[in-house]
Length: 170
Image 1 (tube, rainbow, N blue to C red):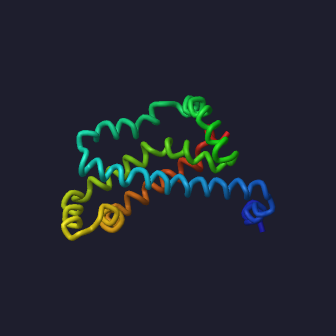
Image 2: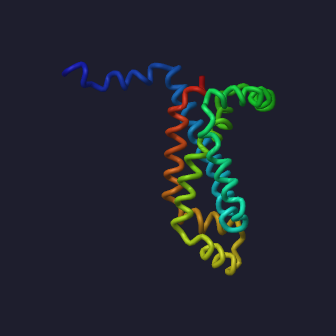
Image 3: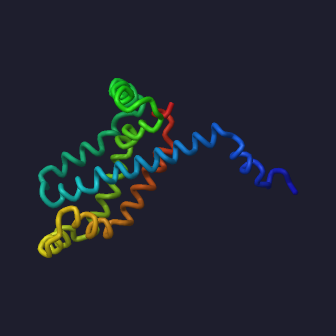
């Protein structure tokens, strides 16, 4: 068989312990970042749409702000904060999720905003609340199932960002 068309190089990945460990940490960071940014933004964007409409522009501005700041400037700005994070939480590569959440905010916020725009959020939430649902139930059992596609897009965007980001990881 042609040496260029075999799977031997791919099989050799498992023989490289440093590479396997780096891939595992990258995937863990992607998972942590995705969960954290969704846990932060889904309730926030729902609450702003339903109760605090006057803050819509402010929240959009804050979410889009990381796009205007180059990553190297963010690294320099976050360096003192990471000294404290390292002091309190230890020196682990997994602590990068804090910075990755900030970097993922613009992309995830736009994807979730598009999903929330596609549904009649006010009617759905008022119907659930009138039937006795708590706010947590409204978000978890009414809103989340209706924005699954937007949440999947958000997760894919944040995973791509984490796996492709080099400035912070370096």
